[in-house]
Amino acid sequence: MPAKPSLASSSALVPRAAVRAAFLNVKDAAEYLGLSPHTLYVWRHRRQGPPSFRMGPRGRVMYRREALDVWICKQEQADSRSNVALNPLNATPQQRLSRIPNA
Image (cartoon, rainbow, N blue to C red; front, side, top):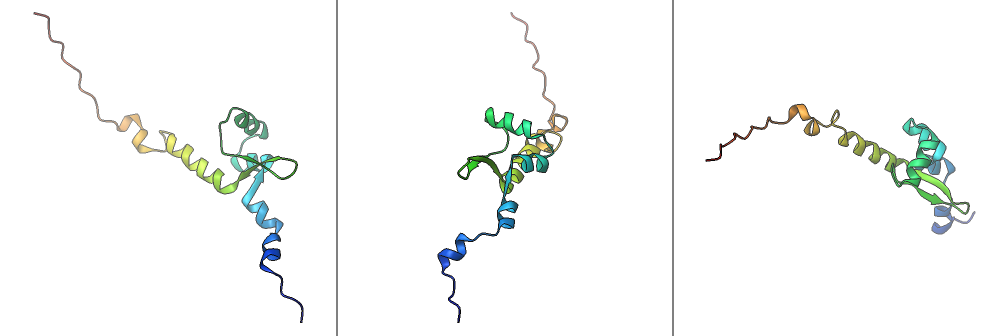
């Protein structure tokens, strides 16, 4: 009977497909977002855009797919065309203050 793999060894063997689904490199993240990789590099340098991190011995810039989806939702909510509460056409009109003449 073959030995059962230990819990530690089974957790160390993560299928590459699962890692690829969870993490995206700059090129894949740019394609996922419909942007150029250069845009993501500029945003990272300026500390803008979706959250990223370095992973592995070579320090490759990576993005979590979940974080990209959350970032996209935040962008939608910050846009007045997508968020009814931010649309200036839905705001209640303000009353003008009447001028009181100096006596």
